[in-house]
Image 1: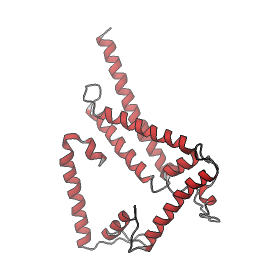
Image 2: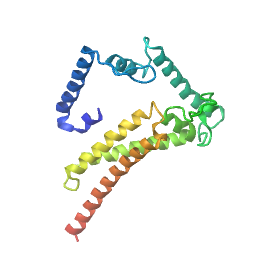
Image 3: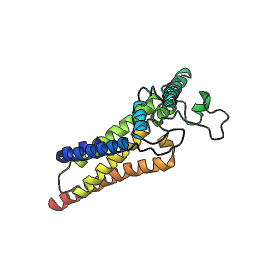
Image 4: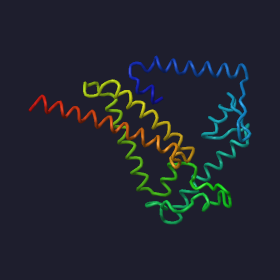
Length: 222
């Protein structure tokens, strides 16, 4: 969706290619009943993908494991917020020291204990409070506004290659932030490093374009 929005006039052609490719893959996978063995008792197939999509909001009536996962996930998220509220820390947060999952009775005694509520955004809200949540949201709104405006800049100060890289950064950051809603993605260095690299790359391209514009003005108007 983000890619389609950023493509401008070419969005309909690209959308048709993307949707067509996905539909062909779905039809072939369903027609040949392609099943790839996976972990946790779930195989990779078209039917499993449909059930996973349904589990985002309401779970699956045909898969008790997915339904239990949705219930566990929802209880853990609400429990983290309620924990901050009960400790009168909803405004400023619980801090980064407490093990929220263990305080909620999850993974106690486990060799590899869960330490976050399995949602990076909820984790930020619980640990940094409403103030931190507002700052977190404001940062991303401002970053996207700057990136979107520069990706639409048709002046000679921002070449097409730079605008294309900005769009790549926006798509990559969006994918990571969406995934962080369902997993503690940002707490893992293998994902967090990519996130902040894309953020910094986008800001660096914008800063370089602004500097080039200023230098051109100085030369043109001494």
